[in-house]
Each structure stands twice: as C-alpha cells, then as structure tokens.
Image (cartoon, rainbow, N blue to C red; front, side):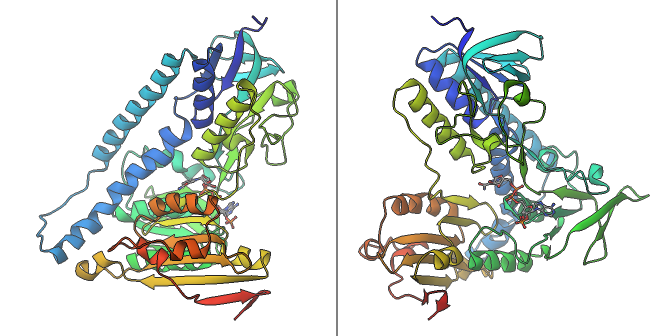
Length: 462
Ligand code: NDP
C-alpha cells in the first residue's frame, strides 16, 4: 500500500476524467474524482448532447413542411422553447445520474469541489480546504468558451453555455464565428424561427473543412434564410434603450439583434489550477503540454482531453483516457492515435468527413483523383425542397488509397463513422468499387463513382 491517500486523483468529471476514474477504480485502484460543476462535463452538460437535442427540435418545422408532398396535412404547429429546455434538462439530469452511478459502482470517490494542484502529488479541495495526496494525478478539466474579452461590449454577449439556458427564445440573433458551434447554432436558431445572422472573419465558413462542402453548406444555409456575412467581424456591442443590442461591424455597418452569441473557439481551462505551483508546463494558449502518453513534464501528472488542446472532441478525450489506463495500469504502453478522426458538423444539412481535404491532399501527394457527386436526395423529389447532397472521395493515385471522404447531406455524420473504419483500414478505391451498393440509399453513391471527376497533379487540376 502506497503512502498516498489515493492511487489516482482525477480533476474534472467530463468525458476523459470520468472514463479514466471509472476504469482505474474498476481495477481496484483507490480513485477520487473532483468536479466543481456537474458530472458529465461539456459534452453531456452543455455541449454535444443538449446540442443534438436542440438540432432535433429545430428540424421539425422542415419535416412538417415536407410532409405535404407525401400526402399529409399537418395541423397548426407551435413551438414552446420552455418545454424544450425543461425536457432537455431532464434528460441531462438523467445522464448525469448515469455518470455518477458508473463511478460509484466502480468504487471511485466522487468529490463535489473545485480541486487545485498544490504539488506534484497533492491537490487542495476548495469546498473543504482539505489537501489530499495521490500517486498519480490526471488533469481533465476541459476548455471554456472564448469570451473575447477585448471586444467592447463582450459582457452583453452570450456563448454556447448560456444558449442552453436562455429564459426566452430571442427573435433575432447574431452569431460570431465560422466553426462547429457557430454553424450548428445558426441552424438551430433559424430552425426554431429566430432571425439568424452569422458573421465570420474568413472568406468561407468552416475553415478546416473541404472547400466543396463549405461552399455547399453556405449556399444551403443562405437558401433557408440564414444571413451569412463573411470577411467581417464585430467591433463593438452596445445595449439599446429598448433593451436590444446594437452591433458595429467592420464591413457591414450597424446590425441589431436581441442576442449576440460568440462562438470563437474554446480555450484550455487551466487558469488558477495550480499548474505553476506543481511545475506543470503549458504552451502559449495555456494548454498543458503532454508527451505521446499524455504525461506532463511532471512524471506523476497526466492530462487528457481539451485541456491539452490536441483535438477538441469527446471521443478523443475518451480514447486518451483509455490509452492512459493501458499505459499506466495494464503495463501496455499505448499512445493515443490522432490520425484519421472522423467528425461531423450537425448543421442542416449535416457534414460528415474523414481524412484529408482536397486541398491538403493535393499539397501532400504528387497526384490525386477526386470523385465527386452532387445530387438531389430522393426525399426532396416529393417534398419539393431545393436541396442537394455532395459526396467527394479523394484518392492517392500512387497507391489507390482513399485518403479523404467529405459528405454534405442527411445522415452525413452516421456515414462518416463507418467511412472512418474504411480509411483506418487503408481501403483503396478498388475496395470501394468492388463493394455492392445498398439501394436505394444516398450512400450507395460512395461505391458507384467509377471515374474520377478530375485529377490534380503537382498542384495542377487536369
Ligand atoms: P472552432 O475552432 O470550430 O471555430 C472557432 C471559430 O471562431 C473559427 O471560425 C475562427 O475563425 C473564429 N474565431 C476565433 N477567434 C476569433 C476572433 N478573435 N475573431 C473572430 N473570429 C474568431 O471552435 P468552436 O467554438 O466552434 O468549437 C470549439 C470546439 O468544440 C471545436 O474546435 C470542436 O472541436 C468542438 N466541437 C465539436 C462539435 C462536433 O463534433 N460536432 C460541435 C461543437 C464543438 P478561423 O476559422 O478563421 O480561425
């Protein structure tokens, strides 16, 4: 028995923290996990899960409209924001309960307190002032929304945190940013009937995605009635006498809205954590620097998930936690694999993607083949909705491997998950070609694009 109070102390009860605490405790380790807010972390409490519930809620008005083309007459429909919030809160409370139960059943000690490092093996619990020691410490405190402190009037703006708890649904909203959260929430608010404007500093939304799906989504959002202002930023936000907000922008003059939401990225939540006291090194963004096994420069302290700013995604944090357990408690050194991570943007239509964009692939390989299909989804034929699905395969001509797939359309996220397996397995275009189609589906297009739409050789389209 070691002289420490615990074998493992985890700071942060989110995806990465809970997984590492639960697995270690189930192996018989003496584990405590401290959480200052609610168990479940960003993903469950104010991220992926409530967001997806909001996405579902926001899709119904299009479903009601589409129903007519299939013979349905739908009566008058009304949306009640407070009902949605209450139902969402109930579901989140249920999930939080499951997280707690999982930890309890595994034998971990749950501590409802902020915890701060006081040394390489010690932590202070702020709720009681008690100091505890542990052989190993995992920091999994996640990130926090960038509140853009340098923006005059930032205090009048909300972030995604507040978007989940607004008392009233605003009549109008301006959302700043062009990443996952901005795009997803622009579609959510628009779908719920809010007059929505998105303002983004770059030339095209979703800067890290493939050009065709970026452009395709931009057009689809505008066609729905979402205003998108690119190459522009908010310079100042002020409150009006009527209680609304007035925005001064660089390019588009003055705008007004009930609510302004900032979706400008998330920063590692390391401030005040005692990292300096314990001697843990951070980078210039405040992210904890770790090695290939999630170990910090202090050998007894590890860090997982968003706080390390590697890839800010829930499954990545969970994967990093499992690798930590393999390495530290199962004598099986395992380094997290961050290559070929499939991801989805729950915009409307959705984006699903894995691997290299056309632009990245063209830079990396001497010659690539691009297979591209654009078509009207079958449902739209009767619904009459003007929408299109885009599918793109990027193939390295050298070894025929499929190195990128990009989809804009219904269920693109579901497709991305399965395509992730094929790319991870190193499937070639020939493997795709000899795969029988599932008919009638949209995804059959992925295995029936026989000739390349074009090639890019040494950067030149041919
Ligand atoms: P993103 O990094 O996706 O997007 C941030 C956006 O803000 C970018 O468009 C960026 O522009 C812009 N931006 C940053 N700083 C400024 C500034 N000072 N002024 C103007 N614009 C600025 O972050 P999000 O906040 O959308 O999401 C945080 C993370 O959460 C994501 O990275 C993602 O990993 C995760 N997430 C995942 C989801 C999913 O899997 N579906 C859903 C939601 C979040 P530019 O592109 O030019 O840098």
